[in-house]
Amino acid sequence: MGLRGLGIVFVIGLLVGCAAGELGPEPTPTLQPTSTPTSTPVPSPMPTETPPLTGVMAQAARLGRGVNLGNALEGPEEGAWGMVIEESFFGLIREAGFDTVRVPIRWSAHALTPPPYTIDPVFFARVDWVIEQSLAHDLNVAINVHHYDELFAAPDEHAERFVALWEQIARRYRDLPDGVYFELLNEPHDRLDIAGWNALLAETIEVIREIDTVHTLIVGSAEWNSIANLRTLVLPEGEENVIATVHYYDPFLFTHQGAEWVGPEIGTLGVTWPGPPEEPVELVTEARQVEWVRLWFMRYNQTQGSQNPASPDLIASAFDMVQDWSEAHSVPVWLGEFGAYSTADMASRARWTATVRREAEARGIPWAYWEFGAGFGVYDRDVGAWREPLLEALIPSAE
Image (cartoon, rainbow, N blue to C red):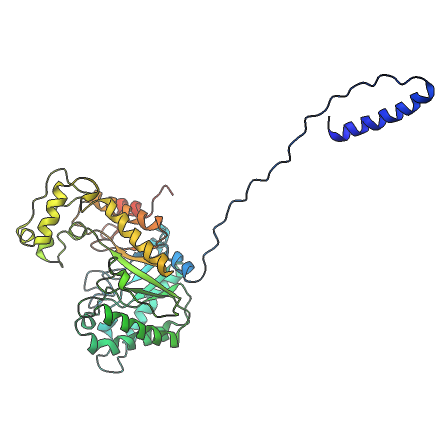
């Protein structure tokens, strides 16, 4: 019986008692059972919702999962390296689950060498088309300056031209949606050293911001956009709409084994991942003659566990460094390139790719795989099909 019922019984009993006082002696009251008191329910705490990302953090997260349209517009001419960008690629990329395309571009091969360094309008129109196709297929698009080899060899002679190229690019694309990103320069290296690159990027950003204050910029460090050198990157004070970028190809003797454009000391094939291999790998002669390569293979062939130079633990440690830098500087980071060349066995390529992707995503780092349809390609253009082990490593079907 509830409290309300007891109250009614009490009132009735009181009235009956009053009447009994007039008619005769009061009867012995009948005891009523008492209800067990109920405790007041304590509300469960509301789940804490992660506040939505804003500003450049949201712009970085938006990049999500991406792929490079490599070996096309960054060649001496499009098609020189066997790759021409086709309209069908954009639909394939979007339908597979990618969010972004990164477009490497060799602007320096399509602009006047003397002032005013005018970019060829025909080439500009080709880049326009790539951007339009990306946006039409609901893809973000990051355009960069790629393979400006003259700048790396002679920074003082080409700095003015580099800034002028970006002045033209920013002016042409300043009114496009913010799904277009400007990546200043791919993998600064050689004579464009740390100090020189930090000074040049500051000058370039100042010029861009005089024209375009909206689009998000992407900037990597000197020494090949390496994770180890991310700590040397100096961004202009007050510039908040910028994403840092890194590239990851470790261990290089696995990811680039036998690649035609690297030195012969990288020519040892049969390097599987992770290490150690079931049977020791035999080095090519040129590899034996380079001390760091010889020592790497000695450890790779013999060492167990996390001390092996092809251990998954090293990937986790590398991305811990990225996360630490990002949090310390309040700057998001984009993994703009990672991949393993086709000379490696497919099972190892897929394992390595999946591990890098997972470690990046576990730390909230968006990424772009190198690359779509050439030597590292996730897509086989010859047969018109995805390389399923690589696609599964990048976009797991179980999700």
